[in-house]
Length: 297
Image (cartoon, rainbow, N blue to C red; front, side, top):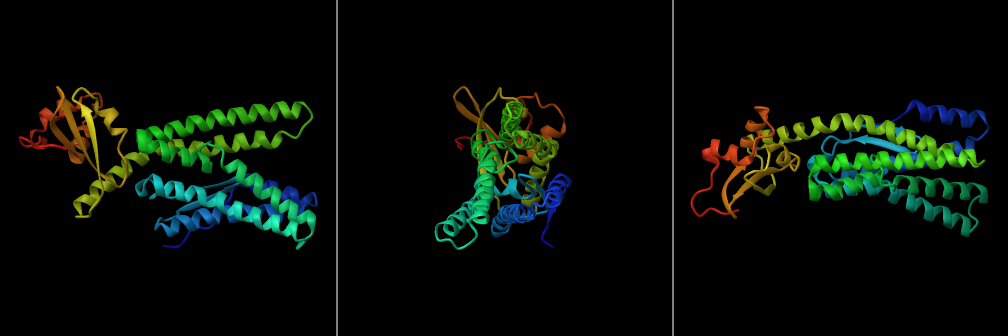
């Protein structure tokens, strides 16, 4: 499959063109090189993990990579892909510091290389999804609350941070300081979140269907087990599912396990559309999914 090439967003192209017209060609070259280094590191990490990068869009403060299999790869893979970009900027910071320390380049250019990479590093470590820090937050939280709730939390936190950054930028601009960059950063975060938020509900179902198809083909998947009270509603259980895993939900009633539901039973119940049905009701209907006498998780 042909690897994806980074695609610059029109806003980025406009800013780069403006920089060239204002005679800031050196800044444009160093900034664009830093941005490509950052995103190329994400792409290299994803491919090293065996993940396909379908699309990469470059924004003024970073990029958004569409990696369809990232959810199936699990939280650790998401963290590794997310930290690859900031690590590349950290290495570039070290190079720039060396150039300054040993006078191996023009001080103004070495300082500019240092400043641009420091800014790229600091911005992308903000816990505002879909920046790298936001991906790390989602990956960590997904191990606790599940993929979809963690995604919603990351988007909500990202919106809050974007609002704070915008307010800081506006106040700074009114006070006579250059705050327009902060306002633009907030707008970029909110713009990038739109597509992620639209894809998130569909992504969960698509990943689950792919896992079911993989099981039907005889593939081996890791098993994730849950415990749920018989009165727990199906919608709450479905929010805890991960992509790329088989699932087994053990149903507790009166302090003991009374049965278990597998992926097919959960999918059949979800297809009927009543997400408020309890797992106890589903279990009673799906007698074949009950544990044998003496069975345990």
